[in-house]
Each structure stands twice: as C-alpha cells, then as structure tokens.
View 1 (cartoon, each protein chain N blue to C red):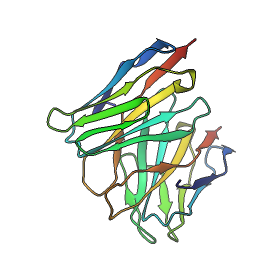
View 2: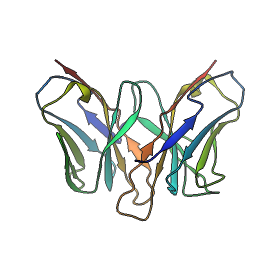
View 3: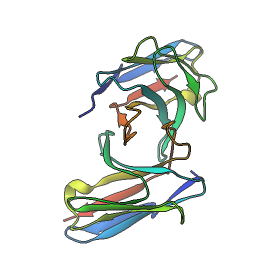
View 4: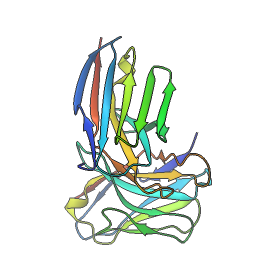
Length: 114
Length: 110
C-alpha cells in the first residue's frame, strides 16, 4: 500500500502570511500532485511534478508555488495567503512506466486563512 | 465539474440493496479512477480503469471511452459503504492529470 503523508494536518494562517504545506511519499513514485477540495466539490489540480526538480502548473495554479527538492518531497507554497485559499489540500503520488498510473492520496491538510 | 458529471448527486440505500453510480465525460478520457472519501475525509482507491470492466468484491466498474462514461455498481450495500464517491478522468495519457467530478454522496441505512 502506497504511503503518502502530509504536514501539518491543520493550519490557521493570517491574510498576507506565508504558508508551506509539505508532502512526503516513501514509494519512489515519480509523479506527485497537489489538489484542493472545497466543500461539496471534487478535487482540483494546483501543481504537479514528474520528478525531483520538476514542477508543472495544473488547472488552478494562481496564488500557489510548488517545490520538488527530492523524489520523496513535494511542497505547496502560498506566498501571500488569502481567505479564498481556505480549503482542504491533498497531495498524491503515482508511479510511471508501468501498466497503472493510479494515484495514492495523503490524508489532507485543512487550511484556514483568517 | 462540467467536464466530468456525476449522477446522482446524492443517494440513499437500504442495507442489502443494489445501485449504480454514473460519470459522463465531456473530455476525451483515456483512463478513469474511482475513489471513496470516507466521513473523516480520507480518499480510498477503488478502481483504476482503462476501457473495460473490473470487479472487486461487491463493487464492479466499467469504462466505455467511446461513449464517454463510466459506471460503478454496488451490490448488497453495507453501512460501511457510506461516503462520497468520486470519479476522475485522465485526458492526456501518461501525465496523470486527473479531472474530478463533484461526487455522489451515498448514505446506506439499516
């Protein structure tokens, strides 16, 4: 079973502050993803990565940066947090090169921006 | 979302009954994944599908890429099946970029 962990699990931030959400996976998956989920909706892709040093824009990248310093770690950075970024953030990883590119999700981080 | 439409949006079942959830795609989906989000918020993988069908216990899923839809059948529903079911489609092969539907909230009652 894939293991994806996220920290912190809960975060309260102030408007204009900097927030960093961290994700770690121990499965040697090449691909990693950051999504946000707003109440009553599905997940939307913010940024993703194909491997260490790579970051790509997803469907809703504005206001977010990403960093992939290693195979295991993928961070989501909010340089100037706004209340509209209050949401639950999920990280996922997926293998590449095989028959299945199934994504495995972390437990989520609940972010509240006041 | 508009690109992946799930139906119904909510469903209530008696324990032991059967039902089907559906996703219609307005994008050219190449693969589909189904997830169950439990009441605590955790996402569990149910199926990863290329065109065709898969079965796992009381769950069966099908993906028809030509007709742009996928279904998830639940047989003999149990209380622990309650939660929100999401389908997600990949439109570009090998990128893993998923587009999610808004989910079906399933409540199984005793």
